[in-house]
Length: 348
Image (cartoon, rainbow, N blue to C red; front, side):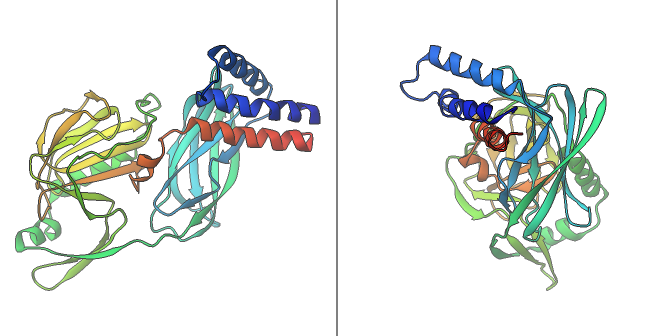
């Protein structure tokens, strides 16, 4: 913004543009086109890029969106979450979206580990703009959250499956970690809300549950549950929570018949313990499409679906994106508006 007047002009555009984006009732199509064109012209005259989190506060075990804007000339974006010592706690690759016509915005989704202590952290970004690498940073406040605890008694067979050395299990775990940490900029398949993947369900375990496994010989081990378990009859249809590309569909030692779907670059939903697989790797599926049936394959004490979401390899609560879209264009646009109005008021 060049002066206070520009800030005032921009403030006048904000309300009508948001109305156009959300297709407000009574807002004519021709008015929407005019509003979007006006806002696009304003955004085209912005100063150098700035990094900001859509929400300055996020709880443990949630995902958060980071925005780099303006983005003309940006070709790549990498974002990390760091502590005061500069240690990397999570990372994400960026991808380009258009929350407003002809106005590119680079964004990234960061997963907040469920065991990360509450406090203030730094979001750091490296962006390749034209031929120059630029570095930007922003702050993020991680909020505490109380997770549930539970105990699970394992039979001798289940104890052996979980505890005994198994090279195949180790290799499968390595391959899955590599897949879930991968980032393909072209992997833009779905930006909306998730739907619950089974109709008939009783939640038998929640995301982030602190588990104690009781082995049959009296020993025990602890773990954190990375998804949501939904008990349902064997054979109950399982649907894709959102649209995307099937990145994995196979039988695995621990998780049994398993499906992984890529929704966005670095964003994957996971479906474990299926009785039947009806999709194969490489398939493109729509939200709600049949991908398998509920079962009890792998390390399972009864028929259920384990549903999981990974963001940059970090497990986050899938329920978050039942309530809100993976890419909330209105929130992203509102965030940009706030930055620019602040600049206008300060005369920057």
